[in-house]
Length: 391
Ligand code: FAD
Image (tube, rainbow, N blue to C red):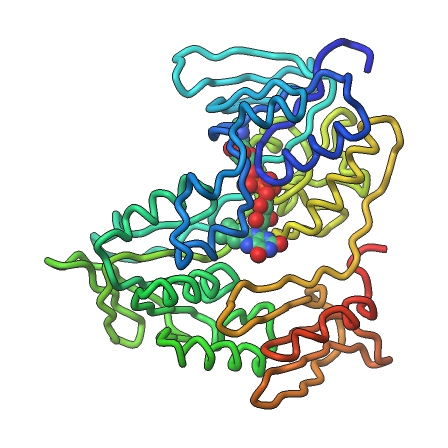
C-alpha cells in the first residue's frame, strides 16, 4: 500500500463483511474503510425467508451492530452513506450522507464493490393496490413486511422461485393463508426438473398453500377489506398483502457510470478484478468470469480469494459444484442446477419419499442435480461427483 489512502469496501452485506473478516485474518494494519447506505447491522440474509414462523423480529436477526463490526474488523464504518460516484482516474468517491444535504469526497487506494442486487421490478400490473405490495431483500424490508402483516391473514406471493417458495413455506407455518402465482408451470421451474418441482408443490399444497401455476397477475385492486388480484384467466384471489418475489438484478449502475465494464453484473476476472486495476467486485453485484450467482457459497469463496489478493498474494477463485438447500422445511429440497445451456438430460428416480434427479451429459458426467424429501441424503456424494462450476 503506497498512498496511505484506505482500502475501501462498499457494502455491508455478507459479501462486504465476509471480505473484511477474511482480509483482517491476513492483514491487521492496512487502513480499512467500509461504507454502506444501510445501518451496517450484520445479519444472515438467507434467514429472512425462514424467520416469520419462528416469530423473529428484524432486531433479533441482526447479530452485530455497525459499531461492533467496526471494533471486530479494526475498521471505520460509515453508515447511512451512499456512494454516488466513483472516479477511477483520481481514485475518488463522492459520498452523500442520509442526514446531510451536502456531499463529500474521499480517496481510496483500492476499492471493492460489494453493492449487492435489487429486486427485479414487477411487469406492469394495473390497479390501485400497489401500496400493499412488498419485496424483501434487506433487514429493513423484512421489518416493513413483518410489521405490515400484523392483523392480516391472507398473503398473495407473486413468483414461485426460491424466495417465493421459501416465504410460502414460512408464512403457511406462521398460520397465514397463502396463494402463490407464477407464470411457469411448476415451482422453481428454472432450477428443478418437473418431477422435483411437482413433488415440492404437492407437499406445500398438503399444508394449505394454493398454487396458481402458468398464470400471471393482471390487476391488483383495493377492496374495503384487503385487495383483489385478478389473474390472466379471469380468476380472482382475495388477499390482504402481496409479496413480490421475482428474483434479483445486480446493482451495476455505479460501476457503469464510472466507466467499468458491466454485463449482467460488474465484469470481474477470476481474481475479482474489474476493468480498472484498482477496483474489485464480489457478491451479488459481480459477474465472475461469466458467472453471476446470487448465493452465499460463491461469495464466500470470492471473499477468501480476494482477501489473499488484497494482502499481496494474487489468488484466483474456484467454484466447486454449489448445492443450495432450499429452506422449504415442509419438503426439504436441494438444488445444484446445471450451467444454463449445459447439454445433457435429467435422469429421475422418484417415489413417495422424494425425488432424486441427476442431470448427466451423454458421456455420463454429472452436471447438476435436484433432490427432494428423503433423497436429500444424497447431497454429499453427488456434490463430490458433480462437475465444478469453475475449475
Ligand atoms: P447485499 O446483502 O445486498 O449487500 C449490499 C450492500 O451494499 C448493502 O449494505 C447496501 O447498503 C450497500 N450498497 C449498495 N449500493 C450502495 C451505494 N451506492 N452506496 C453505499 N452502499 C451501497 N443464498 C443462499 O446461498 N442460500 C439461501 O438460502 C439464500 N436465501 C436467501 C433468501 C432471501 C430472502 C434473499 C433475499 C436472498 C437469499 N440468498 C440465499 C442470497 C444471498 O443472501 C445473497 O447472495 C447475499 O446475501 C448477497 O450479499 P451481498 O453482500 O452481495 O449483497
